Amino acid sequence: MKALDELLHSLRLRIFFVVLIVGIIPALCLKYGVLHFYEEEAISNRSIEIQAQCNSISNQLINYNYMYDTSSEKVNAELAQLSNIYDGRIIIVDSALRIVKDTYSLDEGKTIVSSEVIKCFKGENTVHYDKNERYIELTVPVINSMANNGQSIVGVMLVSVSIDSIKTTLENLTTKLDLIVLVIVIIVMLVAVMFSKSIVNPFLKMTDSIAEWGEEVEVEAVSKTMTEFTETHLIAESFASLLSKMKSVDKARQEFVSNVSHELKTPLTSMKVLADSLMAMGDAPAELYKEFMTDMSEEIDRENKIINDLLSLVKMDKTEAKPDIESKSVNDLIEVIMKRLRPIAKKRNIELVFESFREVTAEIDEVKFTLAISNLVENAIKYNIENGWVHVSLNADHKDMYITVADSGIGIPEEAINDIFERFYRVDKSHSREIGGTGLGLAITKNAILMHHGTVKVSSKVGEGTKFTVRIPLSYIE
Image 1 (cartoon, one colour):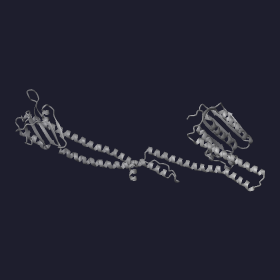
Image 2: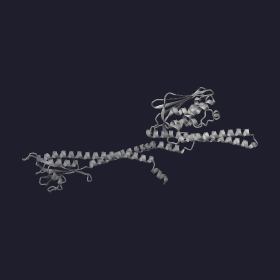
Image 3: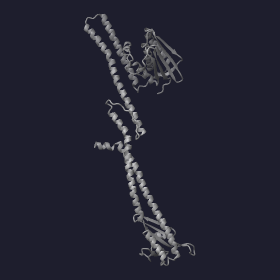
Image 4: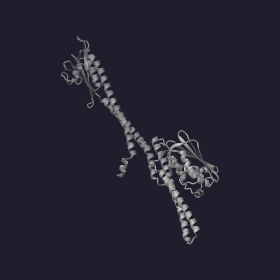
């Protein structure tokens, strides 16, 4: 029952029937149209043909005074010939509605009261087609053009002819058309099968890909076939791209969770080792206690920094969290950042310079913008050489502002430049741990800049330094 329900709700089956119906209906319409046209045309031609011959005989009826004397062999022979050719019956009626001639010799001398005959006497020719009885009945006036008072209708020829020959031809034509329709139906069915398959196949592939989501499978590139439609190909291609991105995101999520666990666990492990060591000593001197407690305090600070950075990332990742946009002086904000970081630079004798080319006012989220620039400048200080320099510049045009942070530091290897904005990524893990890095600073920076619809670019050479260039629109557009 379930299988039947699935079949009835199958898109492929419905497409098949739609194509089948769309293909068959025109074929049937064509068949009945051809038959109807042939039948009407054949009846019309037969009627015109008989009327022409009756008009010819009508003239002879007048010439041989046949309405009063039916003994003319020539006229009788022509009437008999016409009757035999069309397998019909000819009745000639005079002006008194008396039958003067009947090729069947059944009703001669009788009076006929017929609406068709009366109409014909009034000058209206009639043609009646009886499809069921298979005959055509028509009336042709016998006109005396030599009468004293001009042309006058002196009689009516009432002709009934069989259409069996037309029907036979119609039946033969019907048989041939039925064969043509059958061939068309078979062709349409094959086309419907291929058409429905070509439309549904990309979706089946998507379904299989979703079913295999939990397995380690590679997302194959989608190639367009001759029977596939552009729209379904684009959908399948977009889905393959989306699936690939989802797998990348899932992999990144797993790595992120692993990195978070490792980073949070490391300070705790260090504190546990220090605490266990103190407890094992028992009577350890006060200086050792102070040294161990200082190390534990540093580990706690490190743990706290990791947690704060993670919270910052989480807040930025929330799409529903709208930035607190205000018009701010960017010059003043950078001056505050430089003032806060100068003591750190001074410890390593690093020259910290800020160069502003003009006053810049922009619509920004002060907290997130400050966090992004602070991370760049702080990294430039931390990953610098002794007695080095950090140069921060600010410029703007009519549309965007540009902030550069350049340093004389250790530099970044070319192969690592594309990865430095990834969470927990470190170029030199040992050096990062020495200076207390969490591997989240640049990820926070990038998220904050993207939140402002900006971009960040980096250029670097190992041993020569690094330069970050930030572009942010002056006006924030939601």
